[in-house]
Length: 385
Ligand SMILES: Cc1cc2nc3c(=O)[nH]c(=O)nc-3n(C[C@H](O)[C@H](O)[C@H](O)COP(=O)(O)OP(=O)(O)OC[C@H]3O[C@@H](n4cnc5c(N)ncnc54)[C@H](O)[C@@H]3O)c2cc1C
Image (cartoon, rainbow, N blue to C red; front, side):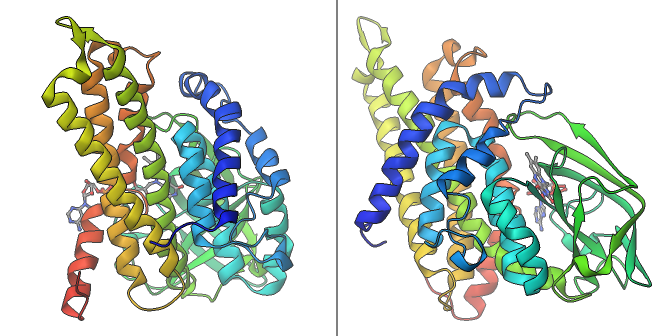
């Protein structure tokens, strides 16, 4: 991991300042108000105005320049305030806008990416289905070609931003049977399409973000909404998803840091047996272990970000970063809650929120078991730690 440039340091300071002023103070309220139209929608326009949604995108398409390291800084610092709010922004920019910018033809990308990066429209990315979780080959949502359009029938589940997104990148089966990656295409579907019903889903953590179940019933989508090639679009998006693992790792790092800081503050002030908890050796060892694991994650995430797009073994570096970052966030959040005792168990305490928010990182962007499979596969092809 290289030392940050002065521009990267300035970006981190700016995002941290924004988070402290506009995200952290609202995080508990956004968490508890879920189900009441709670996603802080103004974040899309605010971050669009600040140019932060455009980080990592070419200026020619409405982006603000910068690259994967700058995008990691953004997601880490936002997630420090609210991982749930950061998740909605991550899906919108890195996955929805990212797939359009990298895979779609110029006309489609130019039509939709600038609005997404300005935050005037919102995006979602949908591949999960009732029978297709970690195993994407099981996707069965059917898109049959009929003249100049596709007709969609089937369902998606657990779609972040799915309740409100203006544009949803939907992974569909255009040929073949479930069990194959070939035959999967991607369509940019209007959220307001006739034949598309969106039903909100309630959940344990990441509550400021909104999840939806999507039902497509003879939903007509123009053929010019194809992202990439027919039958190959999903394969073409794999690079976007691989990069997404590094950004998901940065998000987990921000969440883990928030849990760490909360635990550190608590053990310094909470007194039992006549002294602060931090005076107990076992507590000091726990805090030191938390700090050590998070510092390791920082190195993994940012060194993977530096290699993104540069060839070599960046896919494996991305898998390792996401794997270690997500499991560290879970471990640190659990220790944070433990150190808080009953106080942390109360719903007004951020400690219980970190504990609920962290788990999804272990399944999102490819279940960690799949990351381990991929890392093993890489070792058979010469990857060495
Ligand atoms: C908050 C949240 C937001 C989400 N946002 C989106 C979104 O925006 N778009 C979207 O498409 N999806 C989204 N998802 C769904 C996400 O993609 C799935 O959770 C993920 O693909 C895993 O699928 P699954 O949850 O059905 O678990 P399953 O695939 O059923 O896995 C169940 C368990 O088996 C394990 N497992 C899986 N494969 C293996 C294996 N090969 N070996 C051993 N163990 C294995 C898993 O780790 C898990 O522990 C979201 C989910 C949540 C909870």
